Structure formats: C-alpha cells, structure tokens
Image (spheres, rainbow, N blue to C red):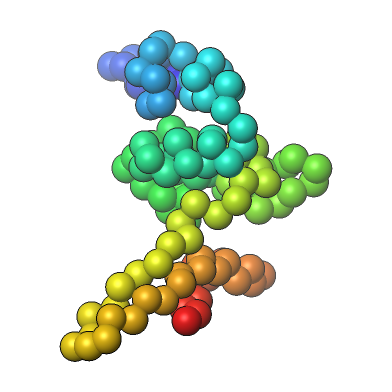
Length: 128
C-alpha cells in the first residue's frame, strides 16, 4: 500500500509499506497470497488480520470509522466493503455463551446492517 507523507516543503512523498497479509512490499490488493483465495477466504483473512473491511489497509479502525466512503462498485454494489470481499459469507457469525447459573444457554449472533439515508446502523440479532 502507498502511504503519503508531507515533508518540510509540504510536498507529498510516497513510500511503499508492507502488505498486512503477507508482509511483502506491495498493496494488499496485489497480494499473491490473497489472490489465490476465494472471496470467503479473503473475508476470513481480513478478519484474522483485524483489517478494515472497507480499505483493507488498517488495523487501527473498522469499516464504520473508515475515511474511504465509497461503495464497493462490483455489479453496481453501493455497500461499504472492499471489492475483494464482495459476496463473501458473513465472518462474524458465531455462538455466544450467555452467563446463566444453569443450564448454559447458547445463542446465535447475527450481524445486522440497517441502511438509512442519514447513516447506517450496525447491530446484532440474537436467536435461540
């Protein structure tokens, strides 16, 4: 990925930083290790590396805080995720143990995105 720095002359200088997936000097979009995987594996690797699902370049923020605010663009998709993970199965679906005295209750957590004109809402549904 390219990082832009401003030097003392206020001129941007570009430096190539290492790919967060394989730690080699290229953009994550050009990663040969990532390109070998299918879309579900792309999403899983992004999750494992704690990368932003929008820009894939940072573990410092999540998609909802990402400054890249454009739609995916694949087949006209306007959702806010990177094109490399377009069509992937949800990766944050799992069972959660709820702390009850007895018996233990397992609930399925389903991520939910409610799209509204004034901003999206991210939440989870709980189903037994």
